[in-house]
Amino acid sequence: MSHKRIPKRKAAVAAGGAAALAAAALLLPHANASQPRAPQAAPRTLKAADAAELAAQLSQLLGDGFAGSYYDNAGKRLVVNVVAGDGSTADEARRAGATVREVDHSMAELRAGAKTLKEKATIPGTAWAVDPRTDRIRVTADSTVTGDTWDRLAAAVHGLGPGMATLQKSAGTFRTFLSGGDAIFGGGARCSLGFNVTAGDGSPAFLTAGHCGVAADRWSDRANGRPLATVDQAVFPGAGDFALVRYDDPATPAPSRVAIGGGRAVPISGAGEATVGQQVFRMGSTTGLHDGRVLGLDATVNYPEGTVTGLIQTDVCAEPGDSGGSLFTGNGLAVGLTSGGSGDCTAGGETFFQPVTTALEATGATLGDDSGGAAVQGARETGRDRRAARARGGPAGAGAADRPGPGTAAGSDPDRSR
Image (cartoon, rainbow, N blue to C red; front, side, top):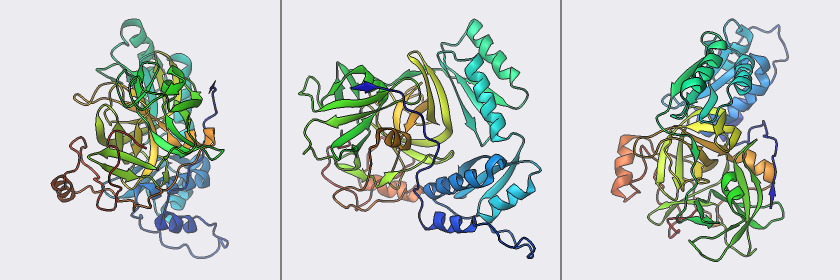
């Protein structure tokens, strides 16, 4: 097994459908600048995955004028931040179908602020991520940051200048969600399987958290059971928190789906980038299925074991044993692997996830359609749909939620993703 650090990629994985393709067509340069100016397009209604694809395209097209973006879940629109006064950038974003919002800080300024925090406030129990909804850096300190360390952090935040960052306190303690118990087991530790994948050589494997891969080389599907898989790569701490674990038997079935309890599963069709504001679902071996929203991207977390960068920040709850578990969208896209955070599923808290797209690129693995060919179901977010889902016997662990409909795979092991 190799414990190696692998640079984080900075490109989005295409997950869009017809809406994203239509948006891409609008990004083509206008050949004749002397023609009359066309009316601005109305903001497009987009699914979250299509909004993520459009955001990636606009980030490249707009360059320094792009100041971040987020998904307006209520209006189903992509909101793009543009530095106040940059009319040409705003026009380009509107032509692409985005809603434009003028802000004070460029993305370069916010990233420079995050770099300053890394230099001056890398303190265990702290985390930060750019929040495009507030146009600020969201800085969080857990309950262990007190006294001189709190003063040091507060001074670093204040030194960024007015309106650059917010500082909040978490009641819990930032930790990785590793535990002893059931699910996948290695060296006395318990974690959760994230997503089954195909390794670069075509053999079956799965992704889980890197701190799980560092904790043990061999993993089983039961406590004190015969090892079934061996860690191939593990990254933690550093530029991520992910591990590729290969099944020892190359004939091991490794369907691309997430079991959510009650013999039901959500087929996973591919990987997608997270978007701030997007609804996501987490499945873990300790707490089952829960949902929430993406709060920030490219987050830095200072765990007791070391600093991890490039994570997704959410408000989805998690507890020890959920480490490595699946973060996915209602329409079947793999988004993240549970890393850590604070709090629990009673009081809530902050949680952080390793982006699946980064892990796939770094390990050379691929993730695709369920071999059973089951249809991917869209998220059901209205109260009527939630009541109908409960009437069908959906799992009680979810909040406002997507429940897989009749097209999802049946007969899956409710406690595993394979």
